[in-house]
Amino acid sequence: MNGPRMALFPSRRDWEGARADAGLETLAHDDMHAGEIETSVLLHVAPELVRDGYQDADHVTERSDLLVLGMRAYTTSGVIGRPSLGTAEKGKGILDSLARSFARTLEALGAPG
Image (cartoon, rainbow, N blue to C red; front, top):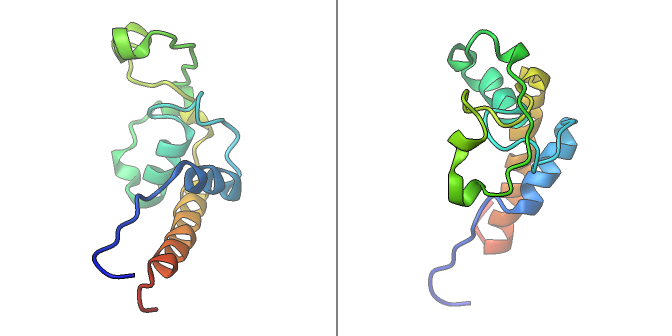
């Protein structure tokens, strides 16, 4: 194959694999912003950025008109998910899984290994 190549990463499949590999309890739909996955990654790489009180900040809601009304119509805190389930160990598992997925993506692109 000639010419430049690119990959869009991570894909939905990569995220789903990372969620499963790390043992996350929430589904992506319910864990939209500042929930289990984002809190876990931050607890692993930069715990000082996670605000005290995340353990009691869960907020799960249906958001049928999110694209029209925006997040403020559904949350005053910015949380849509379950940050209380986040752990540094899950964050490490997420990033490890994504690194493995990216290695496969690089191999598919023919990058030297």
